Length: 105
Image (tube, rainbow, N blue to C red; front, side, top):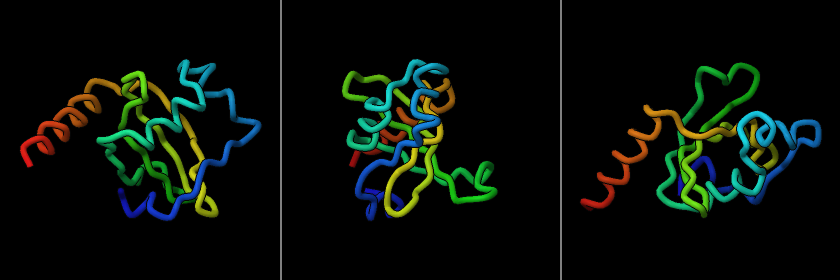
């Protein structure tokens, strides 16, 4: 597990934002959460969007093998999802390359 997620104890959903990913990208809150429990999971800093607070993103898959990009921040050891969508082509390639590298170990 990544150092970023090691101390996280759950999820924090902003009531005003809770349906945003479903409306915009047809990604449910439960799908967002599933990604964090499935492997492989790629966790990276989101330096471009870390202006007022530290942000991250993950590339991962849901229980139904839907491949998602999920942007998030951490507040009080809780993961707060900012946005979620299907991976684009570049992200999918990166994800599969990691799977291929890990299978050789």
